[in-house]
Amino acid sequence: MEPLTHFFIDKKVDAVLDVGTGKGAFIQVLQNIFSDAEIIGIDPDKETLKFAGEAFPGLVFKQMAAEKLQFEDDTFDLASISMALHHLRKINRGLCEMKRVVKPGGWIILNELISDNLNPAQEVHKMYHHFRSKIDRMTGICHREAFTKDAILQMLKVADIPVQFFFENKEDSNLIIDKTELASKVQKLEEVLERIRDREEYETMKPQIEEFRGKAIKHGFQMATRLVVVGRVT
Image (cartoon, rainbow, N blue to C red; front, side, top):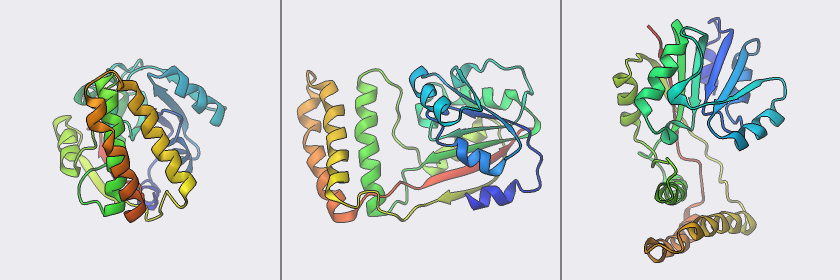
């Protein structure tokens, strides 16, 4: 996240809200960039917030949805949402809520995986993600497929959040380096598939697991490119 660090090096940020914080995966990035800032994380899922609280015992975490932030207007200098945009039921409302609680002249950071211009190993990760997200949707959980880069930029435009700059964050490392790790990924897909055993889609999706295994062996498994965007609140 060096470009992000460089961008904010001369900007004063004292209060940060991390939306859809989950287990706090993006908190460390925020702490590295805004070492003196007060950071609050919010997420609708109570169980994942427990993990975040254990990982970052000095921070405040609150259970709430992005679409209805329980903060006053102009509370934060910056709000971030990382790898959670595709989980929002009402994306524009969530983005507008983030904009509402950020002070005029403040910032919004968006970090989100994208689905286009991926190499073969990243396509394997996209396949893994889309398999799981489809079953989530079938069982009532809001979990969209990855968006394209242009689609994300358009969402910010619709929400009237002017983009200041953006970059693509890529990692070249193979996340499956031995048979044990591959077996773990396959097992996870099998466990997810069991949630729809009684549905007709079960038989049509089952062969996709072996397809995933074959592609992972052939191409590897790399995290899909993430689009990192910084917007300004006017």
